[in-house]
Image (cartoon, rainbow, N blue to C red; front, side, top):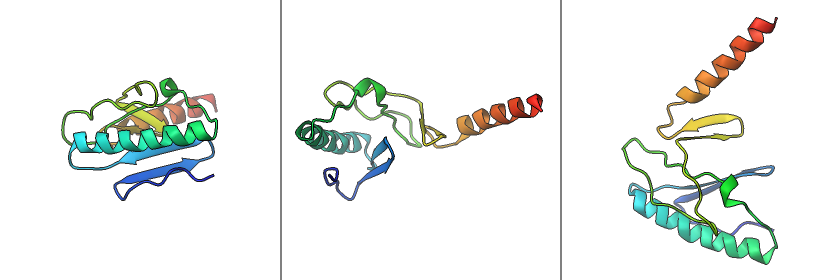
Length: 116
């Protein structure tokens, strides 16, 4: 049961029960519009297969070097925005600096070293 097809500016990454849907465009508004169209197709597909997704457990983040955020997107309900997300154990911030990931990893290492 493959997911609905995306276009060349969309990327769907899945691993086990984690899914990331990425929309790329120089314009945040266009990226958001592409994402919304795909989410509408996805919602129809999910309904057809009787699969539910909790939009409140989903996260919307804009990766950009410029300030500003994409307009809101919905999947039956608004998807909450975040400044950082964790995907497959890697913390990604909105500027893709990996700073939060390095900080969290260093804290974990420091804690483990203190225990030994």
